[in-house]
Amino acid sequence: MKTLSPRLVKVACVPIVFLVGLAFFSARPALAGADDGGKLRIICFGAHPDDCELQAGGVAAMWAAQGHKVKFVSVTNGDIGHWREAGGPLALRRKTEVEAAAKILGITTEVLDIHDGELLPTVENRRMLTRLIREWKADIVMGPRPNDYHPDHRYTGVLVQDAAYMVTVPFFCPDVPALNNNPVFLYYPDSFQKPNPFQPEIAVSIDTVVQKKLDALGVIISQFYEGGANGSADLLPADPQKQKERHQQVRDGFARRNQSTADRFRAKLEEWYGKDRAGKIKYAEAFEICEYGRRPDKAELAKLFPFFGE
Image (cartoon, rainbow, N blue to C red; front, side, top):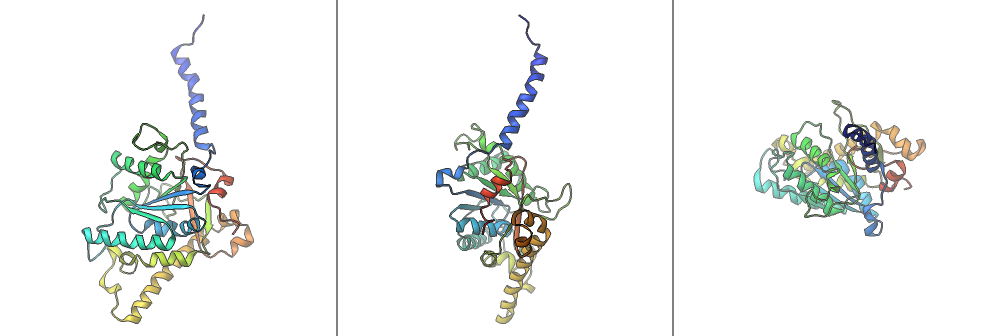
């Protein structure tokens, strides 16, 4: 009987392996939320206690209003993110701020105890994020792209990428059951162009919740009203009327930021809402699909973002 040489067996296996991998990333399995009465489970990672609120506060409020489960995770504790104070007291202050923001948005929040400015993409931290994603039984995972000005932002993006697929591997972190289905991993927007610009597959109107998002950002006083690491005493007027004006200035700035997102991705809004409705949208958030997680088609994206009929 004639047998194939080892070299030919290896060659023959290559297409099979490729097809299995392709099926894994493109398949549309049942959502993890099927165990929660069809409710979605979303976990969003940011480097600091304010990043998730900035990038996904609008869609988080919309998901929460429909009964879906949303969790924000700050991967560092933000303990050097201020011009006047630092250390444990600042970390506790920032944790309190995002807890207040979470109550406004109707979501859950967690701040990990890693020093601000010292995050590294270690195996230990990869395990930590993998466990968090598994414990949340996430359908959607969000994080920053790994090309960013701040090392904590970059490495948060790398860690989220590294957790993609690994959340399905049973003997990686075997103390927490692996997910049967790889979640959809999404990136937040940014303005960096190299090595490649942000290219969203989805843009969502947040007009109905923009005031709630601005309210949530408004309680993160240390970062926005006081200016965070690059602020100064010049931002803190003593006169009560000037203080009100300063709060309004901050609020208006974030409103413009979300208006800019809507204008920047108007064409993408038209794909999802149609030209007439998209032309009336004032505020938006947008997200890009990470190729390392599940790759949903437009029909599945519409189920994951069930807002387009509103």
